[in-house]
Image (cartoon, rainbow, N blue to C red):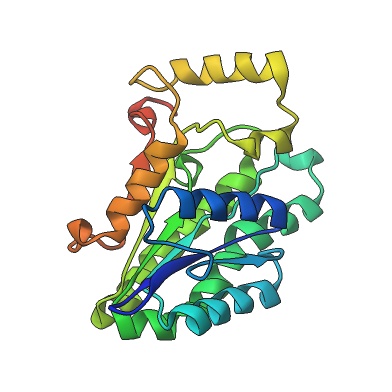
Length: 240
């Protein structure tokens, strides 16, 4: 989440582990060329699944920076398995992080985004527009997040607020730890996925972050309601 005005600008980041947040905060300050300090890189430690954490994110951003211009809903988790063998508790767990928390946090930020004619970027997945075996719950919820993006875009357009999503292909991040994909298995998995992207590689964190920055910027001022594939052409390949 970010904010800026003529007096103060910065952003708020959140995660469950304070040590990791501190590392990110320090990197932001170090790489900002003196434009940022610990007072405008705000950290909120907590579980995004909890409404109290969502409220703290919005409150702390307003308290320290005075406004909200950009909301990036980036928290996510994953789970796999055949639908017939997967307990409903997995669906409930994934829904809290992948769908409910973005909706809750967005609702809290809407009054502030209206004031600034701000923008929302949801981080979805190609799983929202393509079906994948052994991942039906994840696909269902990413599809729902994409529909949230489109519906909110229509709702907020009269206020000048833009809402878009980025839908990455395979990006090698710790999310695959949730599936128990480590070591040699991880290398084999990533090699197989590389072949499924027409550009011949998997995506990087920078590929996704740069797309988010573009959608949040004035360069995308006439874009809203988009599900933006950042997938090396993977969704162009049949059947998936």
